[in-house]
Image (cartoon, rainbow, N blue to C red; front, top):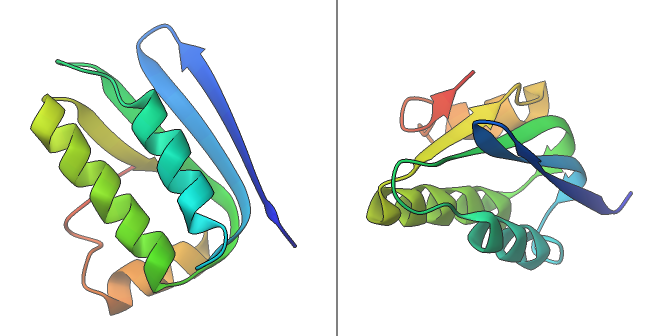
Amino acid sequence: MGLTIESEQLPDERLIRVAGEVDLYSSPELRKAILQAMPSGDGRLSIDLSGVSYIDSSGVATLVEGLRAANENGAKFTLVAPSSAVIQVLELARLDGVFKIV
């Protein structure tokens, strides 16, 4: 299974929906989508991970990079409804407390 990424501007946030496998080969595509959608100032970027069936360390590194970029820009970065596969990897990496997860 590949990776699909959809980006949508909502009234109070930018939402990126991710589905499929986030791995070494597909994470650059997610990185590009996150950085292109990054708001400045007090904007909010939410990443819907409910459709992610697999994520590896490169995918997690991409999310960390997105969080850092948001912090540098003064924006809010939120992970929305991460799948159990994503939660397991975030917990294993002890990053579940670093991200805002809703």
